[in-house]
Image 1 (cartoon, rainbow, N blue to C red):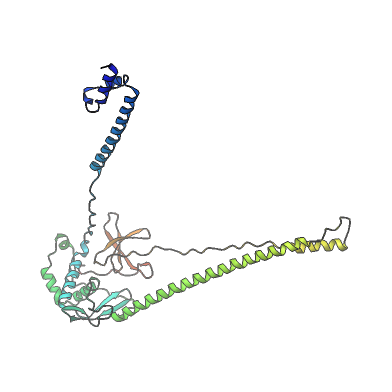
Image 2: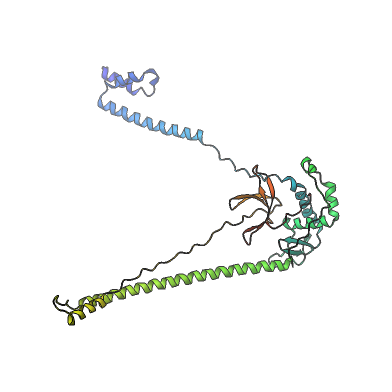
Length: 361
């Protein structure tokens, strides 16, 4: 066997026995190989490199990929100390009312008093009287927001359920250390309050909704009318330009020859006047002003769960309840002093409203 063919045999077997040869020895062996053997070796090396590259990429992807972790539920923040007992009392009242029914009570909302009807038993459930409608065929039960008002009324009237609650309620150390005056009465408000029934309030909501839809339709009609006027103005301006252009062409053709320079007065003067009259007036460019509406920040909406939630309004942070009560946020992220009542309909913070009295105060 010749040196060349022997070297070629060594080179072809190098893929399976590479551990027996160094890279330098392998390169040295290729110097004695024929062109055909070198092409074969090059094709083999290229194929092997592609295989190993794909294999390495798949292995790297398998090791670096991770299973997608399920998104953790965001836990609700702790109930503020001054609201713990009140929170428990509202929950107790809601459960007691759903199981045993409730009496007529009043919900105080800003400058309104809404009279909520008593309960009636229907198909084993306590619902509001006369609440069976096409919209609510099974009637309407009391919800947590309404239970807050019922809890306040029952506490002030020393309802028997308050004694049941006191007997089973076990305050923790933070709640027990809070100074509370259960006999404290709320200060009478000097504001004029309008009393309405729940049915009247519901009709009022429907009327407001209808009025809002009507207003929306009117604004849409005004916008369409303004667009139609603008379009008509553009069409008129376009027609005027076309008319001016058509008038200008014959006037140019029929223009009289200029008068001789030496001629004075008479025919020469009249020709100059005719040229001045034939020149079209320059079109005045119409300027339109685009109106921009003031898009002020709207009051955020929070969950109706009897807790104060952290919200941001007009660059400031507040603790806000679903019914609108608001406290400022301290620098340490805790609930601060009372600031007022949010009015969603007017998009304002009414700072004249007095701080409500909770059960534990």
